[in-house]
Image 1: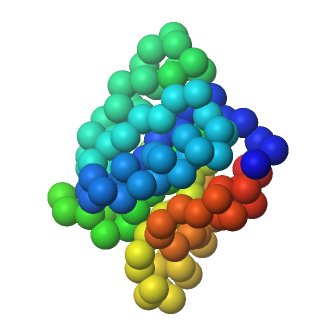
Image 2: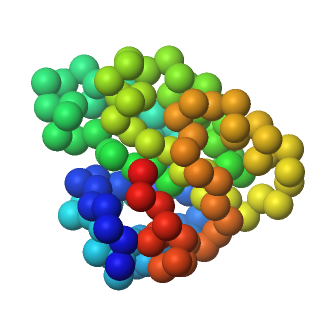
Length: 135
């Protein structure tokens, strides 16, 4: 399937069904050993901040983060604002893919303002979209 392998992938979506579907697609594509799932952007950014402080950051930080936009408490763009404050190593290691059901063109334009956002995909993940990732 996809040529590139990622050690760790993180899914951030408040919809547990979407997380499950996307997790199954990633597992079927066999592109990672580990998948972390967060149902909120706040817990995900806290996790990243905490991992930064440890000597094992290179072993536990995700290579790829699939990020939903529309979530309660902290949306995808608020997550990105907080992500930008993380250290240089974390920002370089964690590539972000916006994975959303939003069809709002403004969301797409806004996501382009963040250096960390590598792709913008519509839900759900498909084997085709996964095979074209190669980040």
